[in-house]
Length: 319
Image (spheres, rainbow, N blue to C red):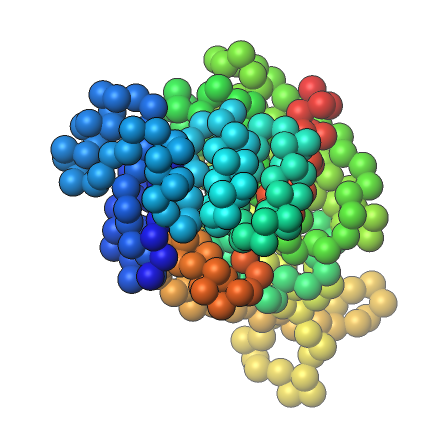
């Protein structure tokens, strides 16, 4: 088992603490939170050991789970890495791309591992179909949330849209060519609604919309590729695959068949992949443990986190 400690005991930090304590792959040593009042409350209520400083916690563990506000990610990660500790760091990886690149360099120099908490990569609706997404040429993503004051210290691009940016970058496999975007501040000092159009060198186009002042919650993405349409509902954890194939010689009488102007016929097939129930946060933490123990590549690397942040920053720069 790996000795692990958590930096930050806010809403998400408490979830991490609970799951790490349940995990068979980690030995939860304790946590640090800068708010003495909150630290005492969490320690009393749940029985976790509270440390007096970031340094004390880092010195006591093998793995540091960084669930602090984004502004402090870099300093926490730097101290942990330079002391030879592996880091799991919540998204976005850091506050700036320069900081993200610096962390990547440090990890390489110190020969430790790092993973970024882009949790939607572990959403069962996505994992059920990700191997079916091959060379998509048009992607549409909507991530809408009802207003919640938590997270409004950063633009909606870093708060919500970055999830879809990471997913899209993971399946397209091409460099970004152009980005066009617009954002509107309604309640916060930073944009609450944003739309971005990302054009890739291979011709793929992705259209992303994110809002944190919606009347309802929605987290849906649609992937269009040759002979297939794939829909992923990250919120409801449902997936649908619609494929088009050449019509067989003797099609079923109830078969859905389309014919284009040239007379070419295609049959439509509907698939509803089996969705395996899981806890995505626990999965991302435990696969990181596997990467450390087996000396393999983490599923969401620091490079992935840096790429997502870079694109997110380019989108913000358009506003």
